[in-house]
Image (cartoon, rainbow, N blue to C red; front, top):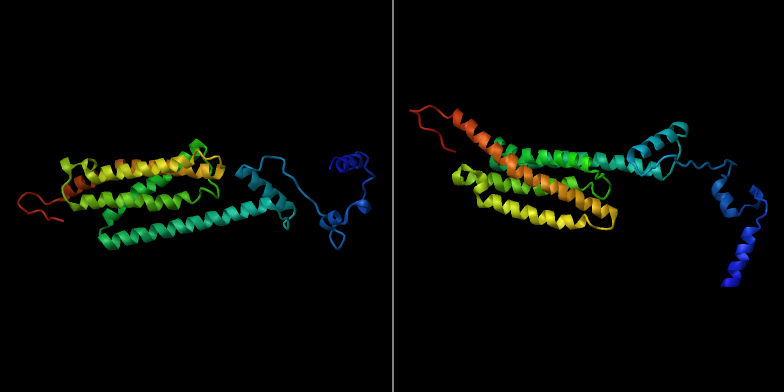
Amino acid sequence: SLPGRLRLLREGLAPDRVAVATLPEGVTRRMVGRGGGLRVEIFPERDLNRGRELEAYVAAVRRVAPEAYGEGLLIVETGGVVLRSLVQALAGAGAVLLLVLVLVWRNAWDAALVALPLLLATLFTVSGAGLLGIPFNFANVIVVPLLLGMGIDSGIHMVHRVRAGALPGGNLLQTGTARAVLLSALTTTASFGTLGASSHLGIASLGQLLTLGMAMVLVCNLVVLPAAVTWLGARRGRAEPSAGRRPRLR
């Protein structure tokens, strides 16, 4: 194929005058409309890999040309749809989970004990991702619903152990349930942590965010939840009737 490549090289080094009439039909068909209007392509000045820069770029273009279309617009609009859908899904899932817990246990305090560590873990995960520079994207945005499902499982086991009977030394962390929750969370975190070393950037961000989220869920379930149980027990103890009246058992 060398002779043919040399011929193409010679032709490329000796171009003719370029004009609209000399352009290939495929090019003119893409760049010139049927009514004679010319296609205008706009290229960004800044790095569009950053979300805010991309949003500012799309907004600036649409102010000048509201009918403009392109990949940047698709990314921004799709991201908005995904974000709104995620918020709706989280709100709906959270409401349904709380309703189920209240209906099954018939106790709003126990449902709150499960929900509080989960809400804090979600807040800490989002804050930690911002501090560590882990961006939210289409690959890892599913992490938050996953944490909601996995985190509530541990919380249910811990609160169920509180309802089951007396705690060893009055400490929830000395029970076998707490150790089981710890070991289960550690194995799950280790599994997700391996994804963080992936060469694929999307998979790596998914693993990193899952690892961070599971760590926050574990901390909240083993620190915040037992503290809330102790506080609630002390509050109920102060509310018990004085001596001479038999305390009511749950």
